[in-house]
Length: 319
Image (tube, rainbow, N blue to C red; front, side, top):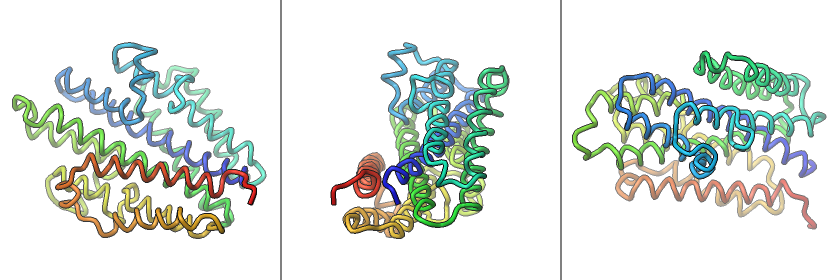
């Protein structure tokens, strides 16, 4: 398979997944902002959303103070923000167009229609009238794209590169979400003048779970009140939770093994080692050594895997 084709498929899926993840975070933040809360608590939520994607400096350079309306505009329709939903879905469509011949008609039409519909929606007033409905639409289009790919693509190398991009992006986003949200709680609430009562505690952790569609799953698995350590365990170590770090790494290792070549042995070893750390890890050990340190190291290892995959498969070589 041509490395250029593999690269476009890999990034098409990554950008689609990134748009969905951005919509998930914006949706939860928007819904949470409608609850009774202090201005300081609401501000932490919006600032945390920018921090997750490492976009605070570029946002402040363009808008100055963090205002909810500006954050929504920056993360949804700002063409200067490469991580905005508009930028991600445009990039996904352009990557799909570049490898039109490697896609099924259904998958191409799904990607193309998503882009055309997005332009229509953002030109109208529907986003401003009901942001929550727009975020649901973005999530639905991502689900549709993924489902069409699974249901119509030949499961050859093209399919596996598509899947690798999805789960690499998902692992990165879930780790960022956990890191920022847990850090915000530790820094701004625990131990601070009793501002954090049980009611806020419930809504905060519920919001994190809902952002990765894990609220009902948590209730089914633990059948208990929502506790931070259980949330961390579910989103890091549970292999049966679709958006957990462990589940994402299982998929990445599986697809990586199918497309392996003469140069990818070290990348496969590193990916397998990272999966093993999650497979045999315990949440009490992770929390004892520091969740922030664990997640920071995880992000570094995932980013290194992304770089190595590009070197091994997605760039022309002289071998």
